[in-house]
Length: 279
Length: 299
Image (cartoon, rainbow over all chains, first blue to last red; front, side, top):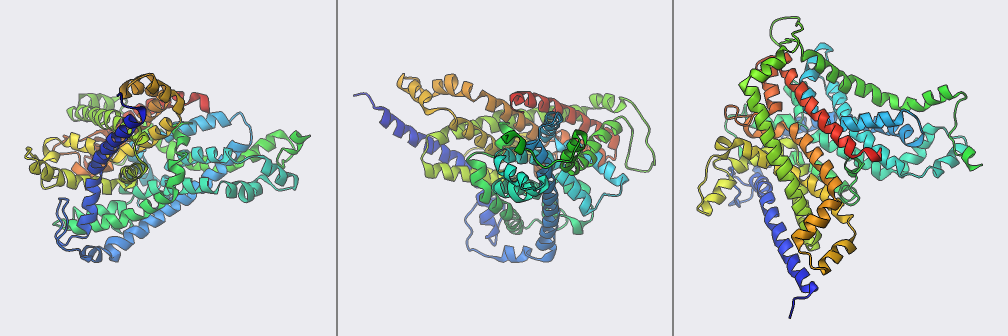
């Protein structure tokens, strides 16, 4: 008797599950290392189940020098950068989405072009420029650059979300005498709340993880965000204490993982990043 | 009538109107001009000078000297070669194929497995760059997990970061970047109407043939944009390699961004480093233009 379509499908499902689990195991190993080592009193470079669980590694790194100051610096840099990005992107997206103009298309094309430029490449000239205008080693300079590098993508994404808000609702407000600015603040942005959240979280996550920008533009150790200060574990402290490094990595990564989880449904389902991918 | 109501409050005169309408774009334009366009223009300028960090106050214009020097410099050619290997192995082959395979398997797997696997792969993507670099440094080290597994399987182990550093960082980039391709391809595969693949299945087309003759042609636009974005992303990877190998041993994993950094800062030759940066930027721009053409119909 020939195998039916259904039985073929269920055996195929098993095969697919097995294949996925194998890949997932390979992907999970490095992640397992960081979690297990952070709890292991005798952590080294291998994945292994610790003999006993300890919070000592966390206790050791949760000091103002090692963890709190760098995290606060990260928060100021990325919070400032994100705020600037989102405000500028929302303002810029509004006329692009609402009014027809001959300049819209060239502007959007330029923005799209800029979203895919390798920002890494311009860090050397940015450094040279920042030295000349005295913005080197300043938090505000780094915030401005963070915002500028994230803006093209943020405008693009914001405009796509804004296009989804029907114009009819604003027309009513306009008839009642509201200005465009009022209708943006009172009507459009609240209606595209989830979209604004996606742009905000995405910008923040990108900046939080970014290493090269603060590595180049900040020099004073006190100003370093966590992405750069983590390097200290290798360099100046002599022997690397892997357990503490793992504990720090966990603390530093948790905020972005949580934030990502909050917007994952919107990113995953309709795939909002499709703003860049699908046009 | 409706058309008349449907316009925002506007000052008289169309020139003034378009000016008011363009006003909200101004902050973004100022930021982009000062901090993005400015550095790019400056980059194009200092690439043609002999600007250095040490000592001298001014620099002079040297024309194409930096570029001529680069193409005679073995370290530069080495970096170009390594960048090609890194991009080819990790982005074009690794992230792209593995991402597609994962997305295709997810289409037919059970829901809990799909959620679990997606969660793990995406976590690797969301982790900060330096943390990711560090986890893979631990994985590939001589005392690390990979060798422990190889020992357990009675396979020869070696010091990966020393013997095959460019492959180690390429795998690291696959680990970190595959989630993006997976998400793009999952979205693309979900948009293929079920009837088409089912019809082919009833007609007796096997999995591979369906993939090759039906699925791939239908998602070719997604393949194009994904390849483009992966490549651009991979071209500018710095932190991951920096944490894992610092470009070494010697310069065996020194891709262009690391070479650029070394020339500009460790050797203080800003002009030369910037010339390399400009080349990277030009290559990136070419990819970017192709990418825009792929999206052309949509703007």
